Length: 181
Image 1 (cartoon, rainbow, N blue to C red):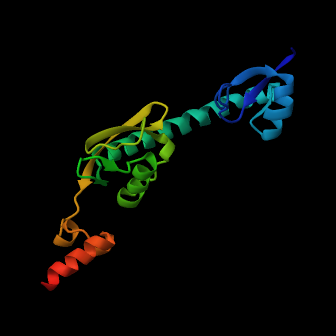
Image 2: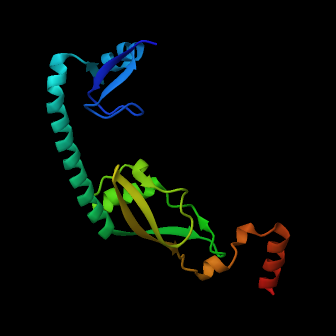
Image 3: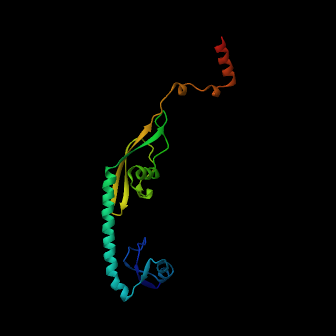
């Protein structure tokens, strides 16, 4: 298969990062990378500009890394409390998901985190203290701690006594006769 060399202008998964010179099949370059603007052909002039691209990439990556580390420190200090409704046996009705965590972080802490960056194996259904990782950068993962509490519903006398409409017809008649006496 004939190949050609291209310089990537963007990160391409499975191929390389921005400003990398990679060999790809001619059809892939001609039909996908070049029309999408993800790469351009290697020429002597392009190779001279490659150093500028690499410097810009290094500066951008350093800036992104610093921003991710700063955000990681903010996340490490933050604490949230989630409330789950639970039954008498302690079993939770519902769960805390990555979407719940991302929404609460945005609304209460002002941190806009993509829910896909939150590393949660499965939704949390247990009460107690939990910790999840948040992948902010390919080298930076923040640890976020939060508490899940049980929502306790206050019991009232009305809640303890069954409502009259749920009783059978014969039971209601029997109770009405007992009240008349």
